[in-house]
Each structure stands twice: as structure tokens, then as C-alpha cells.
Image (tube, rainbow, N blue to C red; front, side, top):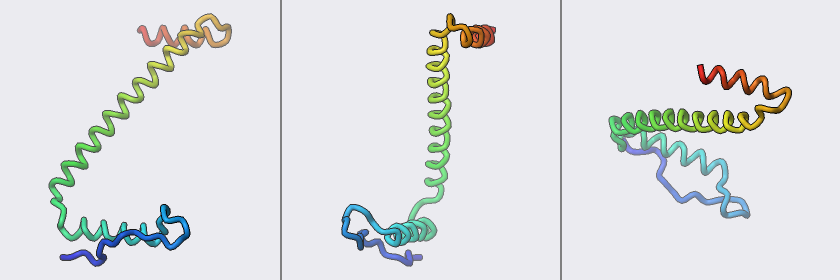
Length: 98
């Protein structure tokens, strides 16, 4: 199978040459879908790469959330002597220590 749409350079019809029109993006999207469906790309490789991408995305999210929570707790530890926030911070510290 060959793709229905040939890859052409994206040209803008507007005065600003750096912005492509929506039509150009739609044409490029159809072309990419045709390339994917036509079998030019090894599907086993795509599945492997998608799996690895998903695992790394999940791992990055976990690491990022851990860092954000640690920084938040560190900043909250500064407010241990503040009247209203101090009790909440102390309860939070006790919960984490337990």
C-alpha cells in the first residue's frame, strides 16, 4: 500500500511564513496516519517504543511528584512556630514519622 497523500513542504497561505495553516496540519496528519497504516513502520517496534515511553513517563511522574511533595514538606517545616499552621505541620510530621 502506498500513502494517499504525498509529503509536501508545508506552505503558509498567510502573510506570516512561520505559521502554517490548519489545512496544512490536517494534510500532514492524514499523511502520517497513512504512513502508519500502510505498513512502512514496523508495528512490533512501535509497540515496544510505546511501552517504553509509557514506563518512562510513569517513572518520571513518580519521581517528579516525590520531589514536589518533599519540597512542600520541607517548606512547611519552616512554619512550625506559626500559630494556625504550626498545629497542622506538627500533625503532618507525626503522621510521616509514624
